[in-house]
Length: 478
Length: 106
Image (cartoon, rainbow over all chains, first blue to last red; front, side):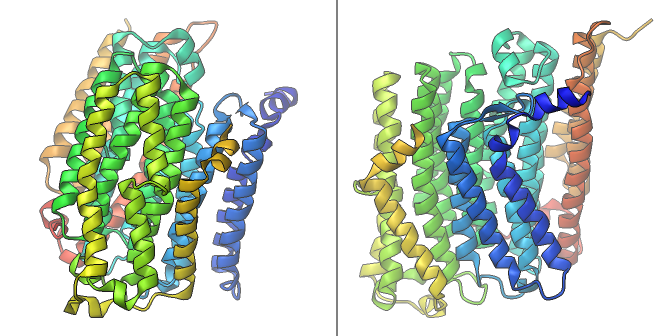
């Protein structure tokens, strides 16, 4: 390659990938701090600085999108930047709530943070991937650190079990994706999304390949019938990691699903709508019968993935990608702060690394820690979609695009009815906290740290802000 | 005499199917890992076959082989982390059988 060609390839690239460069530098510096004596104090500062710089980079990109960079392998458009902000918020929420969570593994907190940043980098790479190679690297960069993070508390059986289960099923999902990508390549002769959209991947090899790719993405997002691993893995993983997985991974999978949905044949819309409805039903019914709060929130996350899938359906049906992306990003932003906050509070309440996450253990929380209980109430209401919270507006945007643009009133109605089931278990948590008497389990809850309390307050503020003043966030995206 | 491209695609499909069956049938976590590797290599073979199908003498189509190189790299990374988790399981339970993964649940 001549210097001129290289110059042309890289031209304008760094504005587009600035945030990812910042995260990469942060990872390298954190690894360096790991081996330098006396740099231990610097590590949290480095982590926060990395997130702040990347956040500023994404905000800058949101204002002036750079378009395709690095020869079209990464598309730094507004949607990628907005998704990047969602991922960064998810990382920040999980990290802050995770401070002070580990006891036995405390010496390895630095490694934990490096793994988290690598995973974040993978998400950012996925959301803007312009070809299947970039997406695959992003997917693996997201998944492999998460396998390690799930098994991070290696002295505990449940954590190791969650890590190994997630690894085996995740590797299976990646292999499905790869074989799908290979079939698309064999059929259409390209792995670039732009070229594929021009040649139209509609021969039989490509169609099988696309179906495999879509299944792999639904697998990562935890959509029926690929949701069976979610409750076990979310329950067994350390709670800060669960917070990160529940919010970040789902967002990344849907970001790319929206990017590549134009390749799917139009007939896919109705079958995806059925899958979405089944996902909502199964997630909500499963959550209704589980006693463990982490499992309950995991299964409720399955239901939320179903609603996000409806945003993809509405895009397939109407062809309006901006509206679908806007509603999905808004939905996910609200989900990051409400589900992230709820999982985070569970992490705060676990005492000495032992889980106290059953419904019994939070009984009477309202009288002992009214602040924590109030925050949890707000998160539950937002997840349930009560007006004046971000969760309500997210659902509203998805359903309204489904009704107005895609003309699928029936699907929207069934989805709304199914979502009402969810209130059953969200309200049960609120009732347990405020109206039921304490049990012996409750005595084991730990004293929350001040930092965690502040993080909960920020999450509550964000949930309410997203719920009451959407114009600011919508203005950012337009 | 050259091998027709269809044969390559068929071979890859058979490899992939064997991998999928192995993934669901085997109870030993190392064998399950090997099954996944088989699936990855089926994808590699398909990439190379695809590259051969779409190449002309004037313009070779190289993204398939490049993808395959990335896949080999990622397979190594996955095996590294996966085997570490298998070792962690063995340390706790003195076995690598998946039947021992039964503690999570309601």
